[in-house]
Length: 166
Image (cartoon, rainbow, N blue to C red):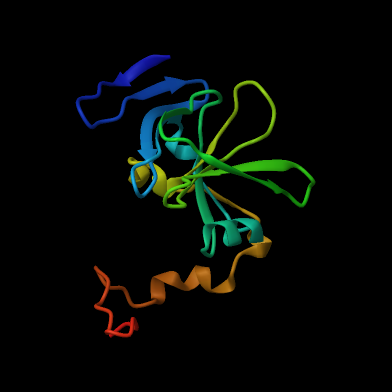
């Protein structure tokens, strides 16, 4: 691979390969116990609308970025693994932080280099990972397409003493 752009402190290196633009990325969980680095193509980010991803993310869909095979490196912490069985019968390990519960990735079982589907929110450079496709569209919640019409606030409003939004 040939280097396209140099990187200074806090920046990413983008490499060109036959797979597309591969970026050196890093990230971690909410509490900081888990940190990692990997290589991924920002043009490969995707949204999964399957009901498993809805449940496992606690949201309407999950946004993921597949890594270059074998490039994921755990830099700190020890991941907790939950193995989900997909509708196809395939085992899909789900890795998360045992301290704060942040989902980190899903992958496949077995030995050898793997692609890790990183949870986009854990990638420090997440702004560069704009989804280019959606899977399981038949399971997408109908209201997701109308999000642009919902009023937006730049920050969260204050909570009342009982915990409701003011």
